[in-house]
Image (cartoon, rainbow, N blue to C red; front, top):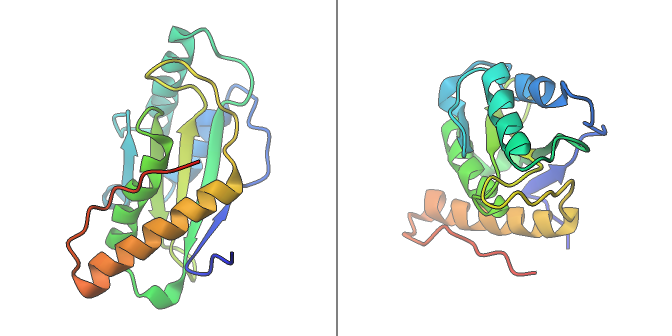
Length: 169
């Protein structure tokens, strides 16, 4: 299946060093446009303080080693005609993939020729302490394509639909 409306990629990097979380979050938030940021399980403040929030969850469950953060990029097809704010709203749908059990920070980057979302996800769940250093990329792509389809239906056609998509493995 080709995913042409949204491209999902995972940047290179092990992200196992102790400052990885703050560096990734700093990059995500670098444009400093608070209207284009969102997240789950965090207070959106500064990269340092959000990294501290991630670390507190890891410490609470005794899981401070290994990969510190997941970094995912969602690139939105320009021809969809979505605004930066609409893409931010799409970011919440995409973040819902992680089941609202992991801390997530994301921001829309509009400083290139295409809109894209950088997302950072804590590898330790705040709900139960489960550790996950990766998600299946193909499953994430399928979910993202479902999200963009539902979102375009809402934006373009005014459909009042339940935007929640339940992932089925």
